Image (cartoon, rainbow, N blue to C red; front, side, top):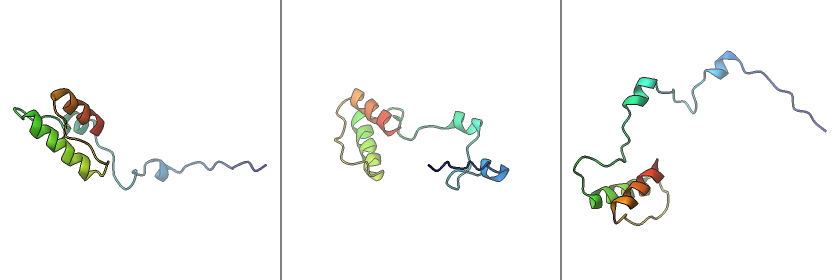
Length: 80
């Protein structure tokens, strides 16, 4: 039986960014706006088609255009 030897992380490894990206600050997270949310006075059909377009850009498979507000909200939640 082989017992793995744990190697302690160095200070550089602990503070290294994930996948080459730095973390965002708390202030940036508070000011962040989800690009998939419904825009003011946007019709449900145009919101649904925008969500479907985003879904296809992310290569998440096929998805029908949502027909009503509840489906759009569910779709938006799925994109999050």
